Image (cartoon, rainbow, N blue to C red; front, side):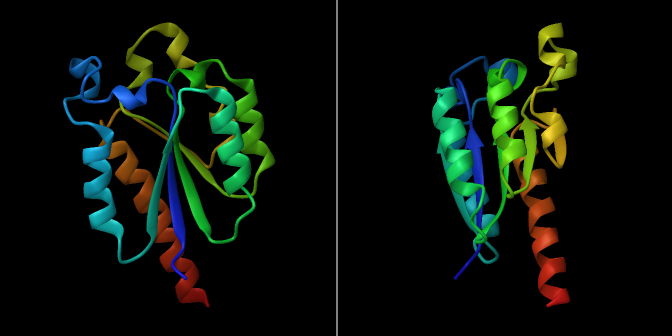
Length: 152
């Protein structure tokens, strides 16, 4: 059975390609996700979940967080990053490693975006590389999986 790698997107990221293209670009996430799936399909099953509801994101983290077939989670919680102690707690409560990603450089934006309630519970943070931030997170997990397979 092929291992899974999950991408979870939070609030307003369903509007990528439409919302503030000067910050987030013109491509929808679904279009980009198809490219990612094709790039990594030999190594993992790439899965995707998006919700504008904090509790649904927490439920998904709990669902995935103790499954040994999950390599990792690439999480862009959107604005929940800067407000949700609960998502931060959910990340710290699970076994599956999480990488926090952001499309924009949050440190070059409004001051409230400089604080993350998630980062300390994640294994790493990637910001400011556009949609490629997701690819960088995925590549980290793929490299970890290759290393693990070489040890076995």
